[in-house]
Image (cartoon, rainbow, N blue to C red; front, side):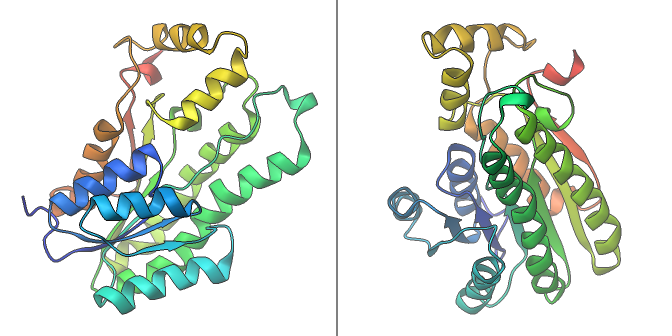
Length: 253
């Protein structure tokens, strides 16, 4: 269980379903991990469940806070090899004409600016270690449109553009950059979206969504974490600039 032995990772959105599952996978495989999220109590619980790994409460859309997270990882562990830029919010479920401007701006700030800042500050740190891996959480919503989810879809398309740019820029420094694009996963975010789609019967919304997935179910957080682990590890040493779906076949339709 040493696929990430001697590796140091930073995981944003570490208190959420996918983030927490990724932290658990990485720690089990020998990594030292700094956990980052805005939710103190949930973050502390994930840290405690994984050997009391250090954590930092931060807003990834704020430059000073993101820079401080990278500095803390380097100070605490001596460097940085892996960045999982996973923090994200869903926004509203409304048509474009009714969508709140402030909510749109907040989604873009967290989901796009937060990733850009993560790249800005993680790339130099990882370069100092001779290279490593950066994985960005996108979505199947980054590959196709979805009615009433304009901000989320736009943000998840945007991070694929950031990834492809970073992959080209970072190749000479031996830093690989990829996105993971999940279908609906059993997380708090999906509960929020289901309620937004069908406030009076969110279970019906879930059933309709699941029926659109060829495997006929949502993914589990650990199934996304398994792909994160592969892309973070040296097993994916020749993989960069890639868009990796973990979606039960949803993107095929």
